[in-house]
Length: 128
Image (tube, rainbow, N blue to C red; front, top):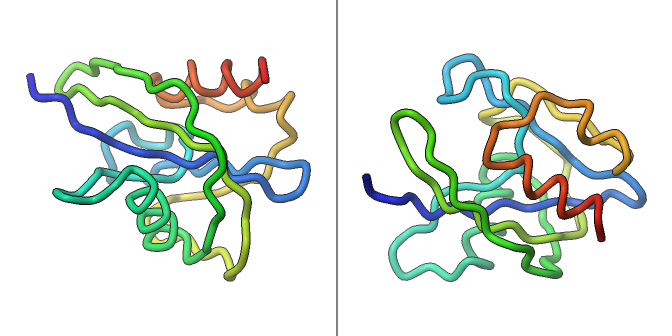
C-alpha cells in the first residue's frame, strides 16, 4: 500500500486552535481534523500546508514549528501526516470542503471525534 504524504496545520487564533470537520462525502466522514492536504510533486511541506489551508479555508497562515509526523494505516489507505503549528494571519474563514469548523481551547481538543491519524498530533500538542 502506497503512503500518501499529507501536511496539516494546527492553526492558532490567539489562545484557541482551529479544528475542521470532514464533510459527509469525504473519506472518514464527519471526523475532526487539522486543515491540510496532499503534497504535490515538487512542492515543499511548508508550501503545501500554506496552499492547502488557503484552498480549503480562504485564510493565510504563518507556519511555525514542525511536529512529529504520524504514519497511520486506515482500512483502504495509508498516510504520513506531517503537522505544523501555525498562526492565523489574515482572510475571512470560508469552509470550501468541510462541514464545520470550531475554535477550541487546547485543553478541550480531545472532546472532539478526531480522525485516527490526528489523535497523536492532538496529544503531542497538549504536551507542549
